[in-house]
Image (cartoon, rainbow, N blue to C red):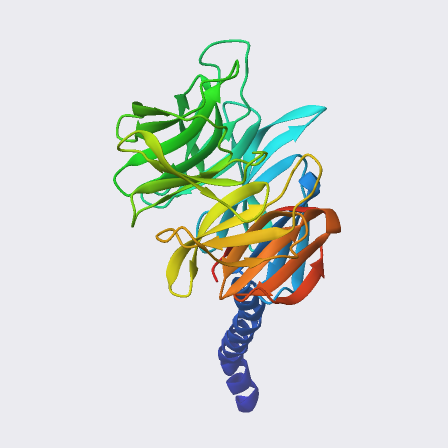
Length: 349
């Protein structure tokens, strides 16, 4: 009887101890998949047609696919997060920006205005600026939407009676907007003061620049025109308010221009792609100081979009349904099958 009482008295202690062991083991096991999932936070996002996001690890192993509808482009926001603009389709206009982390949709940012297209992240103030398809029915109907990327909420709308082609920023609180009137013409670059959201300078340009970047080290803007008969790199001094140089490029149809590190210094990377007929197969690498082509890829068929990371150049070979990977010398390393890739970014390299 005495032993039985002792066992009964110790039973609660045994139960508590056993539960404690189970909790520890459960936490250890449950932390394993979370740890693995976190490890994928740095990865590659590809917009595959406007209907699907394909998510890869940094060594190009496919992790997941997410169905969407009416996607336009992807923009990296943080080391773990990207935004995807939902422009919509012929049957329904889009009116939101999707937030994705670890390849999955974690939030949907509802917008006041519909048909968002380009998204540009301003690392200086941690806000994203969204351009919309231009409308022609009313003045001041178009706008640039500002999103607080810390809360993933629409913050405000900068009313702007113009069509937005591209946006870039400097470290002193200025936003450069490549724009044209909603009724056509009046091609220009508007310089905004982001403290007041007001235009402080308007720079007329004699060409329809479709993609541009601002380089801090030179305090200049570099732009290209997708369907120009002459393949030119336009160099714009925004303080003087004029195009100061036009550099002839080696290949036709300069489509997108981006800034990436190359051999320890920022260079201009330009893809050559004609969106009307799908032609083009080059990516040029330009030294912004000498204005010379220092290298190029000659077989990146239909490079609608691209990025550069860890001495590798990854191109969306859109009409070939592939991602093409090159080393910094331009030699092809591998290709990955992806249906009609149109936008690509990497986060958390």
